[in-house]
Amino acid sequence: GEQPWAVGRQQQPNFFAQLVPDEDTRSLISRSHVLLTLHQQAQKLCVKKLTSNNVKIDGRAVQKDEEVPVLNGSRMDFFGHDDRLPILSFHIHYAPTLLPAQTNTTA
View (cartoon, one colour):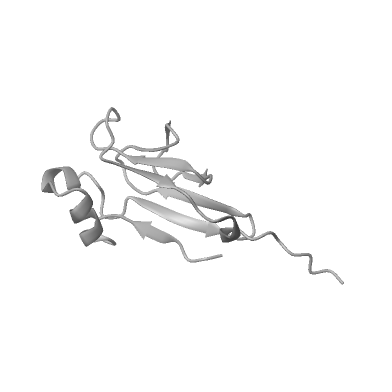
């Protein structure tokens, strides 16, 4: 599969500075908040939560170090100290060809 993609203030500092200009609020996003992994053989995209801050996928709380599948059209919310109002929300959409069908290699 592909290498995992870490998402957080350390990996994308300019991206998060533009999306969340207030430094105090932005500091609620961890340096490494989540890890996205594309599992080609299992044909799924997964998110692993790396932070102790609240993260929800489609309204479901994700536990620290838990990896959950992300369906096309899923919503990922980053929260600060509580889970009432997200700091950021991402809607995840990917092309059907992102996860190609497995090919039969038997002759």
